Image 1 (cartoon, helix red, strand yellow):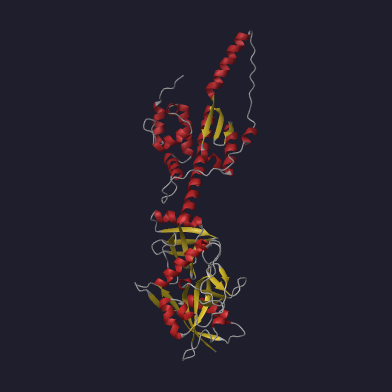
Image 2 (image 1 turned 120 degrees about the horizontal axis):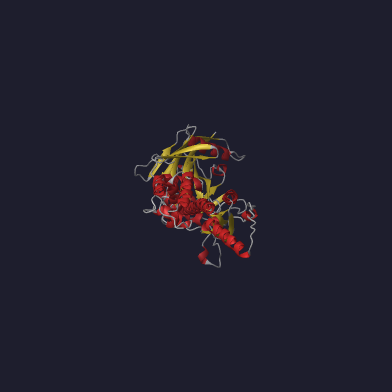
Amino acid sequence: MQCQRPHLGIRHIGHVGFDVDNLDPELKSLFDMCGITEAQLRDKKTFKIIYDFLERKGGVEAVKEELRRASNPTQPSQTNPGPAKQPEGPTTDTAAVAFPVTTVEVYGTSPADLAKVKKLLDDLMSEECTSRDFQSTYLASIQEADKEAIVALGKNNQVDIVMASPDTITVSGKKDDVLDTVLNISTFIQAAKEREAQESEKKRLRETLCWEVAEEESWVALDSDISYQLELAFHKKEESFTYEEDGEVYTVDFKELRRENSRGHSWKIKRTLIGDPDTAIIQPPPTWTKMEGRDLEVILLPPDSDEYERIEAAFLSSCQHQETAPVQIVQIRRIQNKSQWQRYSVLKQAVDKKYPNQTNEQFLYHGTTKEICQKINSTGFNRSFCGRNAVVHGEGTYFAKEAWYSCRDQYSNPDENGFKYIYRARVVTGLPCKGRQGMKEPDPLDPKDPRAGLYDCAVDDPQNPFIHVVFCDAGAYPDYLIIFKNI
């Protein structure tokens, strides 16, 4: 029998936010996925099941918002990526579910009468029972907990759920129970779709940008999940964002670009676009102060600053050696040279791209004289005046792993006041080769293939390097000038 359109049903549907005659496209998409036709929406029983389902999910708007998240999970994304298929779908544990069985015994006086009764029972079963296929490529991405929930759903609704194929579930049972089951399965599919889209977006963001926090002298990339959440908040133009990591709560102020923890400690934070060295955006170290358009600033560090104490502690520790007299620091100056930093950063990014799974930068020491300091501050480590005192490992600029070596008068000659000068430098060491006298550039990586390029520097001992020789003037940056004296 064809059901007529019930006025009470239409008013009820209107109460929860949709009208069959003017169906919202987002809800229509959900109903189409579940195989629900317009005729079925006008059926009282079907409507009641849908109404109860929407109410359990928080109403129409809540369901629509869930559908939007699944189809477009992030503001930055310009694409709607498809699912990453995996080999296994929901388990077939439902096959083991024991459903109640009713046995009907019919007695009659003739086979014809029994046949009529059987037909009536068959027609009744056909009217009350159905089998519905639910297809989705995201079935393979459903989590184990959701698979277990689907099994429990089959038990509770007393329906049979079978994996007909990797992307198809067949649900069989009483019509009302089948519809309720299919509607609930659709929520697991939406969740799987949202997870796949978010993972794809996280991967895209990892390849294009990251959020970094200042830790001492370096920028350190935040966890990719945190970067993803920060990027969402940033694109929504939120003023701040709070997250938890390793038991600590942090709040990021997007206007000030600062991160603060619950104890009031604060760090600089920045958004970095990832690109090729030719197009990369070069950021200065987090310790630098504003330069107001100037290319060079030499900043005298306050002795009571954390930065001063960190550089001082590392230097004094590195000076302890039986061949070196005790030293006392007079000043520490930070060298902020934009053009030098630009050249150094481009070279470092290129080496990082060649060798992404190793540390390509080291903090090393270079001793010099008062006169040459001005040249290094302005133009960097030029081999024409930096390699005068050592040539045994090649004709380049020499750097030592420990400061005591550079403290020798041979390398840091005292001035008229007895002050000596050493740079704590950043050096791109990359992949080193064995140095030798007369070497003017590093050895080729593959002598048989000129396109393979060269090693990045030379060292005294490739197994345990102490001396590093740089042949490219952009391969080192004079981070700090340490002025000291022997005591």
